Every structure is written in structure tokens, then in C-alpha cells.
Image 1: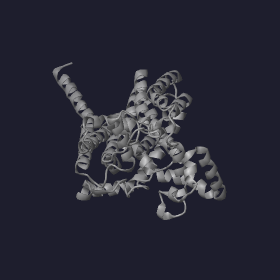
Image 2: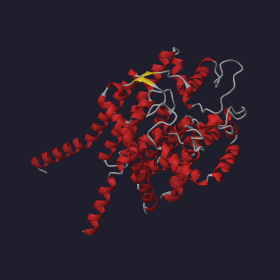
Image 3: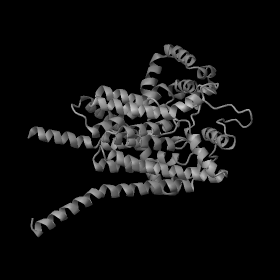
Length: 448
């Protein structure tokens, strides 16, 4: 090779390397936007009573863990062990509280850490999506996640959403890397992270099992899928079983599953009065009995469904998924907000207020695109003759959306519970843009 050819070759390699770094540079820019927005939000947030309702329960549990070494919401001895609330988020708060005993410092540090975790979620989603989507779809997807008002706003609440979202995405990252590397250790690590996530939100617990069943039935390389997913489930149980052993002999404080089922059984979350929408239990004398035992709840709902079958079928089949994927809070103060706020960056800056409004309006459309793309990817994965790692990752995203949708078609379908799925939802919505290109390319090649 002469000098001119050698120079041309090295120049081509340099140009190729530059092009390769462009998506990473864009990803760092979007991460910077995500981190900046979240830090701005939590540092300038003026909220009315931040430690109340669910947040107060988590705070009491964390306080008693640090000060009294007991997992309880009680305020004096003898403490009653809490069995209804899993310890994932209270342990996170307890770790911060042990370092920051002052309430104001504790609160500020919690929000700062949540802002960082929320921004890191954007970065992790980028690295997952690079394995399965065109880079322009990936950049669009993480941009939507970066500016998502829900993901920003929830980083400013002492609630489970931000931590759960991070653990859910981290577990998916470890899982897809494990599948790609054919490495069981990564799979077990993913299971352990999802175990932590399940201790934050128990609804995730059966997802690895659903993934295992789907993979063994419909995906090639069944021997690896069996080993890898058994490792995944083992990792999950390593974190989950100690909690179940801990509460095994403790009297239950409340039946959380029964309460959620009972609450979610009211069509449009209304019992009689529209004024109490979101709080139907306040005027239903049967609610206390329904939330004690799921069998009681089933009996009451079955009787009511027999009287109004069409109304209940529409609620469970169409109403619940629609509410679950809605952008607007049902039991909060309105919009994307759960607790009332006096002032945020959305109130101060017109550009951010416009982004808030547009994302709220676009959310239902993006969710519909994501669910459509999920259906396409699942069908393609089932019908594929050979294992396609990229297609399988997209299928996992879709399975996650359908899994949680089905869970909340049984239990309470509050939009707040769908927020941790928004990173996957927006990534799938962005990924759906690749479908017309793929179909067009296939048509062109068929004609040729």
C-alpha cells in the first residue's frame, strides 16, 4: 500500500470514528439536559407540606429504622411491625437519614439523590436502546424521557416512583447485557436488582417469571434461556425471601392486595358521587369489608357486576387501561402533580411550561404508539426463525408494558403507577418511527 492509499485509509477510519462518537456526544448532551432540569426543579421547588400522606408513612418507617431499629410506623412502644409496605424505599430513606439526621438536610439530600438517579435513568435507557433501535430513534426517545414532566416532578416527591424507575431500568440493562453476552452472572445480577425493585414496588415481582415463560416458549436457544432465566429468578428470590421470612409470623397490618383490588373495582373510581371521584371508599359502607380479604372483595364486585354487567366489563377491559396510561393525576391535585406546589420551574419559565403542556397532551398518543410497536415486536419475536437480540430487547420492553397494564386491570389503575414505565414507553414510541422505514425498505427489495 503506497503513502496516498495509506493516508486515505487512515482518513476514512478517522471519519468513521467521528461518526461513531456523534450519538454518544448527543447522549451526553441529553443527559446534561436531564440532570440540569431535575436539579433546577428540586433545588427551586416550593411545595406545600412535602412529608404527608404516603410520604409520611415512608418517613415514619425510615425514622423508626434509624432511631429505634424497628420496621414500624408506630410512634411509641410497643411497635407493630409493618407488613403491608415493602421496605425498599424506607431503607433508601433510612440510609440518607442516618447521614443527615436533620429533617431539612435529609429532605434536601433525598431530592438531590432522586434528581441524579432520574438523570442516570436517561443514560441507562440510552445504552439499552443502542442495542435494539436506530440511533435517531434512541436520541429522540431519551430526549422525551429527559423532558418528561412526570419523571421530573416525581423526583421532587418523597415517593417510590424515582427509585423504582431507576432500579427497573438498571435491572433491564443488566438483563439485556446478560442475554447479549450469554452470561448467567449478569442475569443473576439483574434478578437481584429487580428484587430490590420488587421491595420498592411489589407489582414487579412476577415479571421475571412472565419473561421466563415467554422466553422458554417462543425464543430460540432454549437451553440458555432456561439457565439464564433460572439465574434471574434466583437473584430475585435472594432479595425477596428475607423480607417474606421477616414478616412470616407477624400479624398483617392490612391486606394490601385486597385493598388495591377493592379500590380499583369502582368504575371510573366513582361509587355514587362524581365529587368523590378517586375517593369512592369514603361513601361505600362495604369497602372496609372488601379491603380485609380479597375473597370478600371478589364477592361484592361479582354481585355488583351481575347488576350492571356492561358497565363493569367496559371498566375492566377499556376503562382501566385508559386511566392507567392517562397523563393526568386522578387522586392528586391535578396535571402531573400529586401534592400541591406553590412554585416550580414550570411556573417561572415559559419554555418549560410549554414543554409541560405539550408532553401532557402528547402522552396518550405516545403510549398508543408504544403499545402498537410492542404488539408488532412481540409478534415478530414469536414468528422469528432465529434469535434476534435487538428484536428480543424491544420485545422485553413491550412485555413489560403489557405485564403492568394487565396487573392494573385487576388492581388500582392510578396513572401514578405507570410513571416508572415512561422511559420504556417513550423509547418504544420513538422506536415505532423505524417501522415505516423498515416496511418501505422491504417493499423496495421485493420489487427488485
